[in-house]
Amino acid sequence: MRFLNKLRNIIRSWLGVDYGPTIADMVDMGMKVGKNFSAEKARIDVSHCWLISIGDNVTLAPNVYLLAHDASTKRHLGYTKIGKITIGNNVFVGADTVVMPDVKIGDNSIIGTRSVVTKDVPDNTVYAGNPARFICTLEDYLKKNEAKMKSRPVYDESYTLGGNINKSQKEQMVSELEDGIGYVK
Image 1 (tube, rainbow, N blue to C red):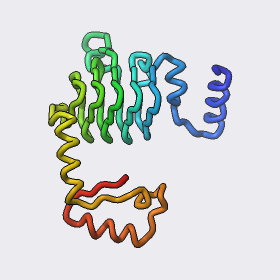
Image 2 (cartoon, rainbow, N blue to C red; image 1 turned 45 degrees about the vertical axis):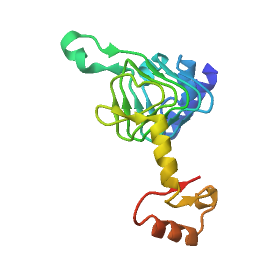
Image 3 (cartoon, helix red, strand yellow; image 1 turned 180 degrees about the vertical axis):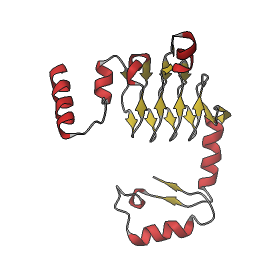
Image 4 (cartoon, rainbow, N blue to C red; image 1 turned 120 degrees about the vertical axis):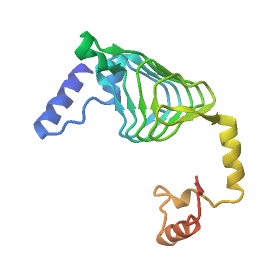
């Protein structure tokens, strides 16, 4: 495996392309990742990736940053703060969120977009903000959205790029969402 990683890095260098280490590279370095992990353009702290543990069924939306170190003390004390990041099972972390060192995000949690997570997040909760704060329980959040689905537009998978959404469906969606939120499969 190390030979293949070196070869991949040589080819990247030769082509002038540097995507940085892959998730597989970081797992080889000690990061733990569960099943059904999805990370679209997430930035994971490669310098301390072995301090990061991610559970099953976790989604990191675009540009999430898992930061297991904090160099704010380096210039003054000569040392950088480091800490583990533990993300439980069935967690969604919204786009542009930063998760700082020494944070545990509990099972079945949702972190809102552009949050900065500096403290532990309990199981079955929704947190958002800078710094991230408790918004509601997961149960309350789901009940609220289930109720909204009864009066707002709900679209099946054919209304997605993967479902080959057509021009008419796009126009319908734009029109129906003029006055609020909707839901898509």
